[in-house]
Length: 123
Image (tube, rainbow, N blue to C red; front, side, top):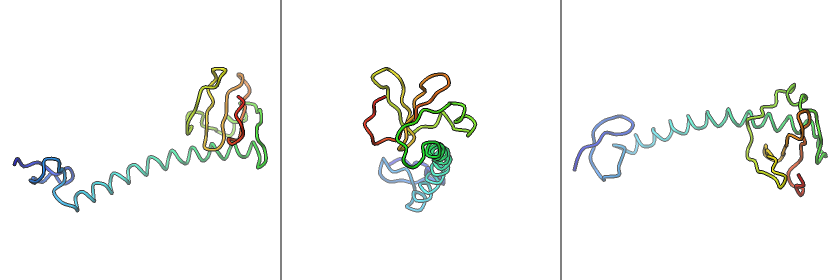
């Protein structure tokens, strides 16, 4: 059996061909570090998504289902247009963007239609 280097501590070890860590400690430490990096990246993105959702909720109100608003209002509130949770192309070949339980679609150069998800989408 050929000695390989541990992915974390770079010490030589032997064992099964698919083994990549020299010990359970190295394996655990590797995954703890990996999870820390992943969490840091996802927290930053989540903050942006939550802010976008808060902006849409503020504009829509608690009971609102759909509303046409001026695109400039979202720009002034620093809505981040590039962060969405998902999207789809509707029957009119327009892109509908989603931020959690809200959706938005650029209706014209100046207007954006925002809707609360859960009602039948009629974009």
